[in-house]
Length: 310
Image (spheres, helix red, strand yellow):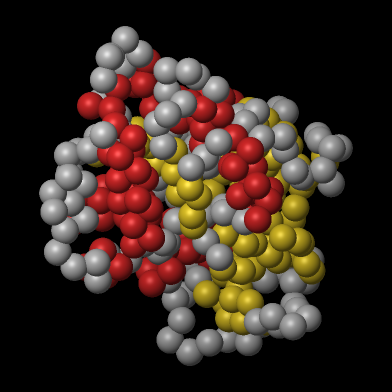
């Protein structure tokens, strides 16, 4: 196992770095953010589940918890694949879910900058259908970073953002407060914008990563009434070029922008990540499926800003 980084899996906050666990499927290199990984286990017998998605292998119970196993080779290749005795299960935790993914080998861990991760172009990633969140240069290797959130959302749509949560909020007045969103997933970005529009927030600007949002903020640096341009920022954590923690740090360290509320909306919200976000100055943090709670938090933060302005 190659390991380019010997300093553990917990990165300092706001450095714009990611640790990527590299693994193989049929000899091809893929990657996952180490922050999503709980542990690696040897593959075990799995109990099939009736009427499951073709890529859901079934369930198994290591110790005291029942886990769903996703056959990642089958999902990626869209065809049944032989299962080897030396296959591994990558146990993950994100969006408050524990899921195991079958892979063939685990290669090691590389620490790299988000600046070294490029979005795949449309010849590789066709609109919302692509499952690669980025292409990373790890040493001499090109590694495809998979969008595990999208994979799970496709396999189990009920686990992702639900518009029903917005409908349960009832009638809401239209609000013109300008909101900026940094989210690199086309699918999730569209869902967030749709949810915000349905909840009355119609003035939403989408950015594909933290760097794009930061560059847009620079256009407002000379504005006397900044709040007329951007009243609140929502950011994912995992994004090429500039991640959400780095973006939050830059905003909160800047005298011009530090008063703008920043909400981290990510699949990676754990106690450790929550602590990091708080250290960086994030006003609120929540897990990505909680779209109804996100709207309630926006209401609260913007009302608080209104009172300060008053």
